[in-house]
Amino acid sequence: MLQQQVYVINMVLMVMDALCVITSGYMAYYISLYMSGRTWAMDTTVFVVSVLFVMFLNNYLMGRFHLYGDTRPPSSIRLLLSILMAVAIDFAFLSAGVFLYKELNYSRAFLSYFAILSFVLIAINRLLAQIYFNFLSKRGFNVRRIVVIGDTQRCKIVMDTLQYQLSYGHKIIGFVSTHREDICSPDIIGCLDDLQGVLQQHNIDEVVFALKGDRDIDLYKHLDMCRKMGIPARILPALWESGNQLLSMEICQGVPFITMSDSNINATGLLYKRILDIVGGLVGTILFFIIYPFVAVAIKLDSPGPVLFKQQRVGRHSRVFNLFKFRSMHQDAEARKQELMQMNVMNGALFKLEDDPRITRVGKFLRKTSLDEFPQFLNVLKDEMSLVGTRPPTLDEVEKYNPEHLKRISAKPGITGLWQVSGRNQITDFNQVVELDCMYLDHWRFFDDLKILAKTIFVVLQRKGAQ
Image (cartoon, rainbow, N blue to C red; front, side, top):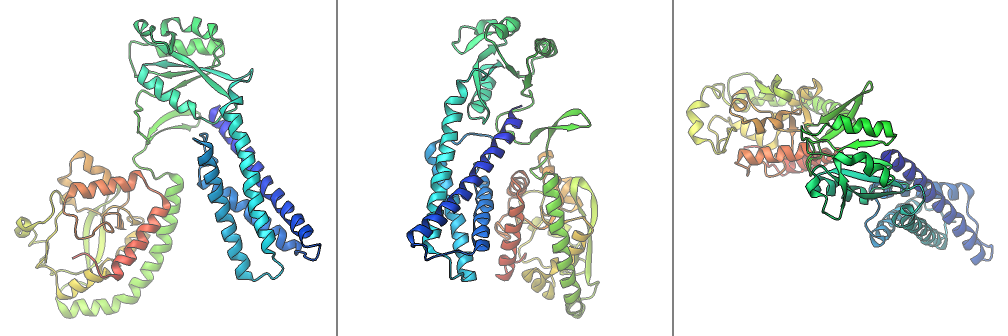
């Protein structure tokens, strides 16, 4: 019910904000017309396009500034500042468009009036809404009266959450304790054993169960009683802890599931990520085929062996695949790995050497310029890797992993990643690598991938490739 109310309220707010922009546009036009003594006129098409442009851009930006969320703004000052920033960006883009198209009949006065009136009308609209949600919505006859059941800590979390929840109007009546000895607290209005009487006495409209998972409590019995009394109930899962953002609720063919996600990448994110991988993979593969003859000749002239190096790596959830690279080491590199183990500069499961003696002369150039990575675009097109992700480990590295290290291979590995652009050759602690990888997965955003790709290009152009 609460989320449905949020959806309806935000739809109304978006329509009202759009009407404010449209009204501002017409008011600015007629004020400019009056102030010019009707000597100025504006092309109708230009006017309509200008108003619609500001209207759609403003709705988008106000959404980006969290003005269409599920919580009420914390203060009127913060609300006005967010509106001011959105309107300022709106008209910065509109002004840039006018300048680029050099529309001679576009009045600066009209632009100024339009901007000022848009801010004023939207601000008035939102302040009135703020007054309603903060004060009037809690005093209506049909305000939903809510009671929270559980221990003090979890009840307080629920109360603090509902305190700022956007809704038609609700009020927290108090807590119901699971233990009778806690009733002396002023916020507690009863005990769970007397739930029926509490609900009737306080005219409760909704119950929230915030229990810790005590098996001595027959939750189903109390839920059934709420059902018989016609009172809706919500359950805060006992699995949930404060700060846990990966627990969510899903319904599959009518069956509810509590889902614990392994990362912040949802189905939509996976689609965007795959589209980016296909586009980037195709571009990278074309470049790979262009540079292949030249790199192949250089590798062959420098040292005997194949042009491409193929090695088994571990992908998502321990799937094994063959990773391709331009060969940058001598043929006996893998055989010599064991004798060089004592020279490993990494702490943990990774293996890395300073001035690795196995690297060929051409290999040093390939690594410095990151040209050795280009064959991996084939792995990206085969859906074995992603453009951005975690570093693909070798099989022997994964054998040394602790359980908490396995999270870094819960997603497809990438050609580049947060680790590579956060000091590609400076990080020597494997736990720090894992921390960066987990940070990437837990806080993933599509634009973060674009930023990492841009940083990678910058790092490569600086010739700070892997050593």
